[in-house]
Image 1 (cartoon, rainbow, N blue to C red):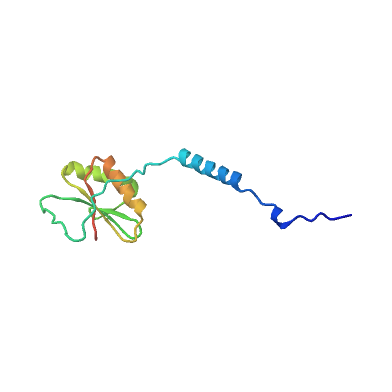
Image 2: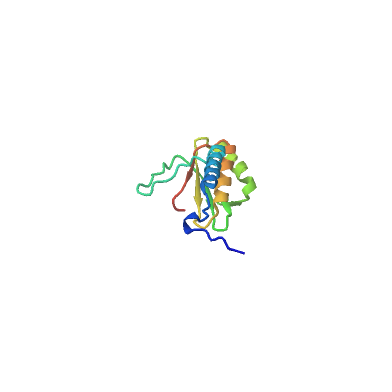
Length: 134
């Protein structure tokens, strides 16, 4: 039996063109079908670090403090996170022009701050600000 020896010029080559076609078609498919989600956020009056704002002493603010263990303090009293809305509603009824100022501790969770903002908006107060330092 003889072995058929092929010349080196007739070497088998893998044709990658069909695979590249499939990859590009899949890429186009994923780009076209991708859903672009609009991010929803909260509008917050952020303090500017370079110029501190002066507070009008006649204009009382509703100050909400958040401790490092996420305890909420309103008007010097410990308040449960579920009753923040009722407290803000009560203080807002006493002084409708009063803004809500949140003074979070640097180690407090952002979730607590967002719950307070949501409670203030549900109470009808849309002027919510964050204090740079407590």
